[in-house]
Length: 61
Image (cartoon, rainbow, N blue to C red; front, side):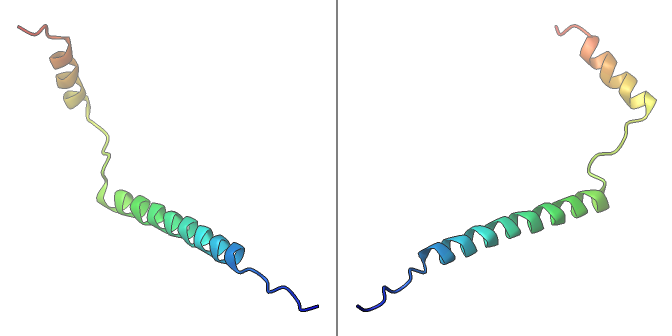
């Protein structure tokens, strides 16, 4: 009897999934690094918080 050839589908799918997950991890790391360097979220000072609070409390006309 001849040996049955082994299917490579499982290996190819596993490699594709692994590569996709690795790409997602690298993108997350790069995005976090860019956000940290550009200071996307900056803390608000007391005056700015007070103005925002007053604007929200003021009834609209």
